[in-house]
Image 1 (cartoon, rainbow, N blue to C red):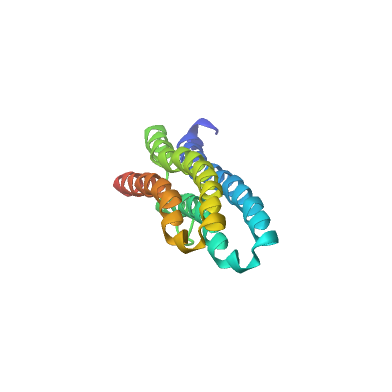
Image 2 (cartoon, rainbow, N blue to C red; image 1 turned 90 degrees about the vertical axis):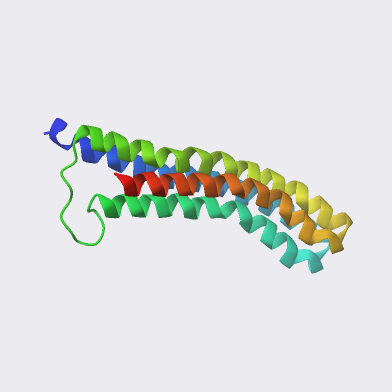
Length: 159
């Protein structure tokens, strides 16, 4: 019974890892940035909107991971009320591998983006007029999450 369903189990593992790891990374990144934002707001409450944006940036990887998971689940028939696909072990491995870029890059880039957001808040504190420039640094980290999102989506859709 287990071997018959191994393909679907592998595909589900990929979808779960995509949502899980990217979500954990986002939670860590948003938490770190949130702690720093709270510190900024204790002394400079007028900077709330600027530091809130910096705090929110690491949260996007969790959304990307969830998107990849939804696409994979939809493709294998677990969303939308359709029939669940009878996947071979090879197809299951392909789905698993397709989800891994978003899972791992999502995790690590969210944590890194949270750290970069914390550092960028120092710019906002010392030079509030430079807040737009401060957002560029964590946005650069986002580039790699977007690349992982694209490759995962392309590969999942190619299976």
